[in-house]
Length: 205
Length: 205
DNA sequence: CAAAAATCAGGGGTTTCCCCCTATATTTTT
DNA sequence: AAAAATATAGGGGGAAACCCCTGATTTTTG
Image (tube, rainbow over all chains, first blue to last red):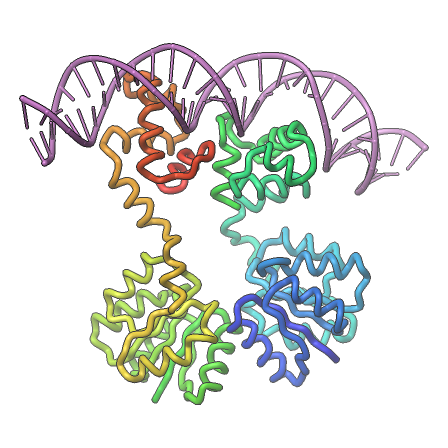
């Protein structure tokens, strides 16, 4: 039973590792960034991967998506601070095995591992009650309305790229980028002022 | 040598605890919220308290302040994700003994503990290089360079007014506003990209 | 399969920001 | 008194953002 744990915060990584080990499991691989974690999943094919959602490079959600698409045998447990239903919903499309809030990890991780090992899904009990009190959703709610291509463009706008530069980066026409911009503004419900999208992206992305 | 550790994330708390213990120290108290942590400091008077800054109830900074005001013997080490100079500056007014970024905890905590036990202050080596990207003070410093008329214009830019609208509001020519804009950008040292002033004003004003 | 959605691409237009330059009146500093 | 800073204002121009409109291809979904 090989278990991989990935978290970009070293202390949390160590904490998770020693906690899982205290439950009697063997942690064979640890990783502090998403890209490395996925490579290890590819190479080592661990039975279980406990992944933080917020990581540099590739986040837990992206790894889960890749694992699902490539039909890898690794069962993914997402460990996160995010109580948002949106992330959970997204993750749930990719055969997610476990979803646990970091705050309740100590109470739930043991049960979760047992269930996941038996092939069952385990979702944090506290999720349903807490996802009502969500804080910074204004931006994330907006982002959810966007398609993948649109989100990519918002990301580049936040990096102060112009439509021309974005077009070059994505190998598409400047006109396409402009079209996306118009749609994004529409979807986000931004006021009809100049550069509101730039300001929005700069602030919330 | 009694050490107290407080962190609201159980996994990070455990990680920090086991790491500190692996360095040969004894952790006598742990706490997952600020209020409880301070009560334990009051009751147990540990030599050292390693506190997370972001905690519910009372944060690390508030605890540090109380410890300082009440002249408690506990030496406080703040463990944080925040690279901001502002927080460090505030903390430094209260006889802060250690300031470590979570990302570098593994490299620095051992040295930090040694120094703090010897009565010395230890500040994260990585702080100095990273605190250049401080937001609040940088903005305020920038504003101080501006004249009264320029500040007024920045204020209106932050309210999403265009140069034309600003001109009408201030009963001056649009060209004057544009001239001020150019000078403001110059004084603030903003990069030569479009709309940087708008983004700057929106964010920092 | 058919409908809907996403992605791509173009024409044409307006407004805004920002740049270059110059210039004048007033006030402040040296 | 001379120099510097401040606030004012103008000409002209380029780049970008955003608007309107249309259309095609591909992918997803019912």
